[in-house]
Structure formats: structure tokens, C-alpha cells
Image 1 (cartoon, rainbow, N blue to C red):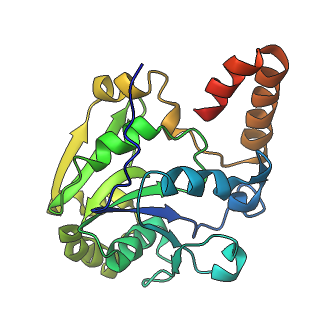
Image 2 (image 1 turned 90 degrees about the vertical axis):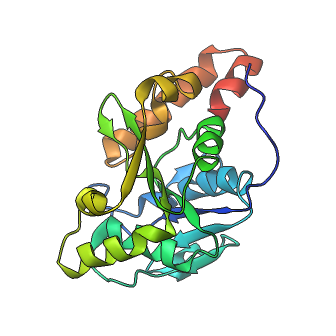
Length: 220
């Protein structure tokens, strides 16, 4: 069993990206009911137990008054998730950020700590799963800001659009598998079917597993 440090990470800021329109969900997925709270509550609690500083990027801060963290808007409005990463990086007081989407329920503390310990001010540290690069579960350094701004100013919204202009290091699948053999860290919830399917699976586990076993599985 891996022993995970309980010390708060001081030199990397956790950034939760909550600026998307949730168009496929038809409602704000960050606020969907989940485990006795809201979806984003679970993500915030985990990150707050790992990082000393957590920032929420949102253009609607009034919807998240219940979260006791700094809330910042996009600087480049209407430019998608890349603008969210840019804002989190710009507003961070640390040299690097760990950026994650607000709809990823199966984050793994061990993998996050492993990545944060290798974050570099000089570029991007990104996991590579069997599905490809995972830019919504990645570390970005302050020196990426100029390249990101250039991409945004030229109208590019894809996160990877600035990768050719900065240092990019990959965490390969075999390294990730040490912490997350099923690669569930990168699952996100985009549609009502995703959401209700997730809840049904977790209910099935609750109904069929001993309490001790479910407690371990539910922690993800």
C-alpha cells in the first residue's frame, strides 16, 4: 500500500476550472448533487487536503459562494478552457499550477502529489493515458503564460495549441498505472447519461460491498 504524505503542497496552486457552459449536461455540472453535497464540493475537498492554495476559475463567482477559496474570472472571455488555465496561472502566487476540470470525480491523491512534486515553472507536465494526452489533469508553469497569451490572441482555443512553443514533459502510461491502474483519474462527466451512470455504479457498489470495502472504493 502506498503511503501518501499529509503535508500541504506550498509551491504549486491547485486550479479548478469551472468556466465551461456545460452544454451537453444542460445544467451546471459542477453543482449537481453528489455524495451528500455538490459535485465540485468533492473535488475541492480533495484538492484542499493536498494544496495550501486552491483557486476556482469561474465567470460566475456568485454560484460558488459556498467554496472558501479565491475565485477569479477569465481574462480572455469566450476563449474556452485554455483561457481558464491562463487565468489560473496568471492569478497564482506560486510558480506552477495543477489544473483540473470541475467534472472529474475519480481523482487520485497519490498521482496528483506525484505530478505536483515534478511541476516546473518552465513548461507543461502532462499525463498520457491510453486515450492520449490529458491536459485537464496537468501542471503548467508560469513561463507558459507568454505562449498561452500568444495562442489566445491569435484565436486559438485548443489547450495543446501552445505546446510547440514551450517545454512539454509527459508522464507515460506505465508511470500513471502505478498510482491509477484503471486510469479513472481522467474520466469526466459530460452528459446526463454519464452522470446517472456514475451514480448507479456507485449505488451498486454500496448495495453489494461490505462497508469497509466500499469505504476504500468510495475514496478513489
